[in-house]
Length: 246
Image 1 (cartoon, rainbow, N blue to C red):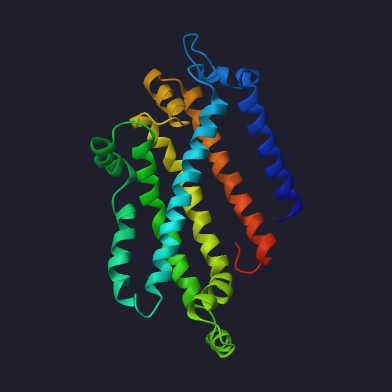
Image 2 (tube, one colour):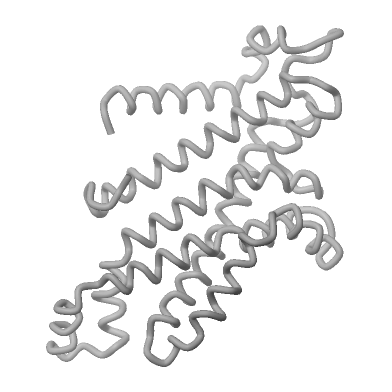
């Protein structure tokens, strides 16, 4: 990443932290967006806690998606599980076929309002990119390397853990990165069913016609998504260099 881009990201991180810690110091910037003496800064909850709650929800959902998607990806790339690839692909596509709002509508009658339906929606929504990248990564392992591993006496499990997964890891992490960034924005809709998050700020702005609230929720969510993306890219570069990272 160019030096200028790094400085820009650091400035964005600094502004985000400053706003979440001392939001009322930014009131003059948002005051022109309010009408009839409405508050310029969201005051019905702590912005820092809402942001952390949304990040926590996203991380839990993506962690669960990763475990299942990688396990399924490994299973269907083995000789004994290849026949289940079409079924597995259909299942993980459900999260993309049905929008998160529809998944929430189905989940609420089953598990109630709050965090649980949001986790279910994000879990389903995050499966596909991780699953497909896991399959791609495992299938692109060089045959010569796999033959050499078998020639060294490695068992199938040893070959998977010591050769295939390490070679596939850049693509797997790329899928996790995509799932993570998508989920950050999508998690905001969880506030419609009572989950804590920055969606509260956006909804409050829509209900009160307060553009300042809407902008605050949207900007903070967008900055978190960008910074999470950059953090994943930095991790991938640290582990694997610049190869295959965009």
